[in-house]
Length: 208
Figure 1 (cartoon, rainbow, N blue to C red):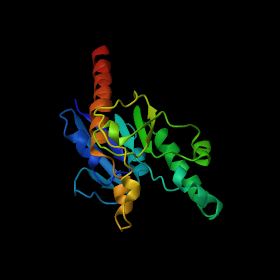
Figure 2: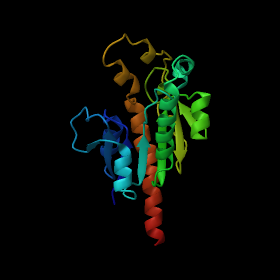
Figure 3: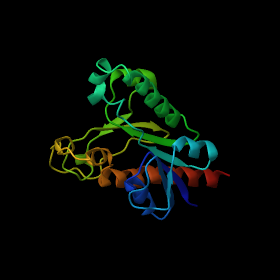
């Protein structure tokens, strides 16, 4: 029995590969951009098309919706650029659609949100983690909104609290590097949440 995993809004393939490295999982990614690793297990397009076309195919979804208009670091621009309010509403709408998708187990990842985003989404995150809890000596607070999943537990606490991501020099690829999931966090997601869903499915099968 393969656990079907959808990695929404991911072009890097980091989380997809972490799941597919394990024997009991079949993961596919989806994003408006093509897969950076050229994987055939990637759908280029709007993730909502996948969810509407195959509404009950997925056992687990890990989603990384765009955070530009939701994150706390950009809240000041709402008061200088009136056009951002409509974009905020669109981003929050996508976030809610993913959180309420017809998938039994869901985790949505985003940075810390500003209060206007939280108001539109309707709930705060269930937990936040740091890269240094998963083998990377850096600081970059990552939040998770969870549906039928336990909290992610630290897997490898290491020294180092530097904010390397925020100190990156300007470059065309800076936004990609800032948005890519740390491999240590991806492995923890696959190992912990993957095993949780696998055990839940096995228990359901035995109960039939």
